[in-house]
Image (tube, rainbow, N blue to C red; front, top):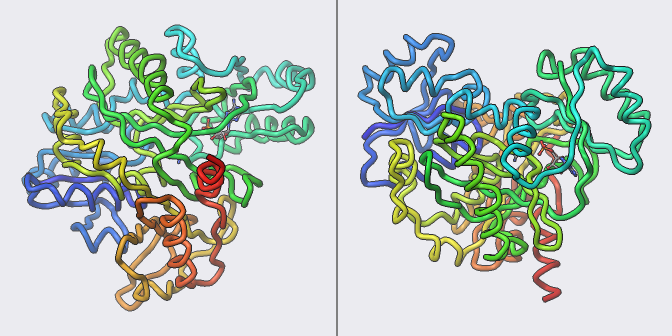
Length: 430
Ligand code: AMP
Ligand code: GLY
């Protein structure tokens, strides 16, 4: 079968690389792709604003299965449109995707379905004064969230009230466009974060190895939130007991709740969790694979990813397409190499040197924001590469990743130096 993957980041690079290993796959197309993805798939430009162009491309290239990476296309309803044309799609419907595209929808849904999460209150932009008063009465940390999609940048966690009020004014003033017409202010949760990705067929699901993302730009979790500066997996705090709780108290009720509302969830359900004393609470839902968690997870994934996603997309997941036991014997650490300035303004177009010096044994370089100008590979985004080390042991996986990160050079290079360190410390204290 021929497959189209939509997207241009490290996540799509990882999905394309894993999908093409399946014996059932003939050709993998990625749109738009990037300089790394073109080494494993055929990159093509498609105008996704025109469903007729998309369908024509699928018809000409005899493609019957589409995997959508980024949330924006899913939130815009692309999966629904393609299903109307009888294509098999791995991505949720527009309504199911509201779990990610509206924080207010997600919070209400969790409340109605008794899914553990932080207490919250929401405000409309007409209610600025009320929201400011509410912030001024909070004791301790303030968690302010833009209701709509904001590329991982719409959450402010601070104990500085003036900063929170200014951020609120910026949001209501249009910093995030209409995504910021409403905000959620929620209880600050203590604990350790983890991301669990469940491949769902509407009723049943398979959990991939739990991962931990590093969301802040700076070492020791300082500075603003980003899309993710690195990830590792599996995560030891997600013990099998904790995973059972995540399944029973969060994933199953989520799938049941969506089913009861008439919108079965088909696709990757990403649950961002805060875990304290072995009790998980939902910090966020995403309606797609996480980036960079996917790069770490698929680096150790054992099984047939195409079979898993395709059978989920048609509503009958094949559990045996994922070999959990073999997967969990390995660990992976993905370090995001970024352009200095990200998540705010940054420059692009710099030549990336050192890619040829990378030791490819147990190292995978996923491209996030790169471009091939036929002479060099150039930086083309805030997050540029995901250098991923694989080993039986997370300490060695991180060492491999960082040894290879140090071989890469481009102007204004920036990366965190502490990816996976929390896990390494935790395990060394056992
Ligand atoms: P979100 O986009 O909702 O996942 O939020 C981004 C990041 O902000 C999370 O990964 C957490 O690090 C932090 N965060 C969000 N909500 C909370 C909360 N209620 N308590 C503590 N930290 C939070
Ligand atoms: N790494 C977080 C996300 O994909 O949203």
